[in-house]
Length: 254
Ligand SMILES: Nc1ncnc2c1ncn2[C@@H]1O[C@H](COP(=O)(O)OP(=O)(O)OP(=O)(O)O)[C@@H](O)[C@H]1O
View 1 (cartoon, rainbow, N blue to C red):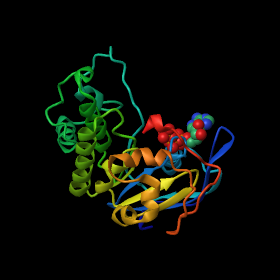
View 2 (view 1 turned 180 degrees about the horizontal axis):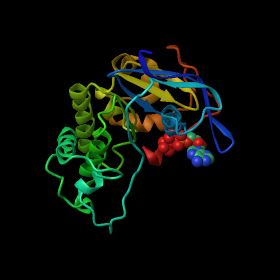
View 3 (view 1 turned 45 degrees about the vertical axis):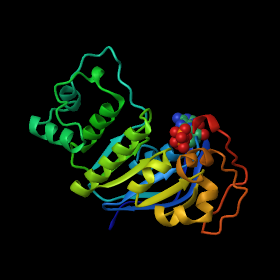
View 4 (view 1 turned 180 degrees about the vertical axis):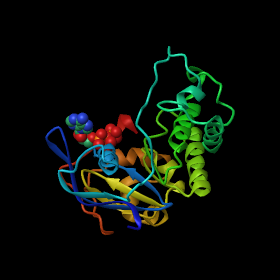
């Protein structure tokens, strides 16, 4: 099997509702793939089904046997009153040699934080510590669910740049969910737009030039806002299909 993970005809339920359907997906070694889509469109559900945390209700998911996965979940917050150093946090649930811990922190752009209390970290530093934790097992595939929530735009851009450096250094593939398409774009090999199914996908430069993309996302920082205004009222000529019953006006989220 040359792909790290493959899904064919994947359907996934949450509660008893089918929230994802007819998903064909594959990720190859070393690729950076970004999943975008409106709130509630099934992005986290897709990641969870791919890693095997949610069972498919239709179709199938295949993972490369023995695949080493690193996972950064969405919105992990720690109790601010919990006294714990970065190093101790990386030692949970099992101890890792200090050298491996420090190397992972260095790779994640968090070198020198090993002895620092977790509670004193900035949002950007904490995200890098989570990344370091996911790197401890030398993953072949790193999966991150909205890893830059709460960071300002320069912080987001720096984080995505670091991810690209990690991929270049370690050769791992990266699959992530992001709302900041305009920021994450340059670090992505492929972008997938999910809206209950795969609405459209492609190489970011090609997608960015496409009229369909501009209608979906707009350009520049206004793009994120345009995503939430996506009403599927325009035509998709580049292999995109669409749900006419999905209109999103969550402008406050953009
Ligand atoms: N545990 C659950 N039980 C029931 N429904 C759920 C559960 N988790 C998610 N859902 C529903 O499944 C749908 C898809 O949710 P999902 O979290 O995958 O969306 P998302 O695209 O990641 O959203 P967001 O951008 O807000 O994080 C939503 O309608 C959500 O309400």
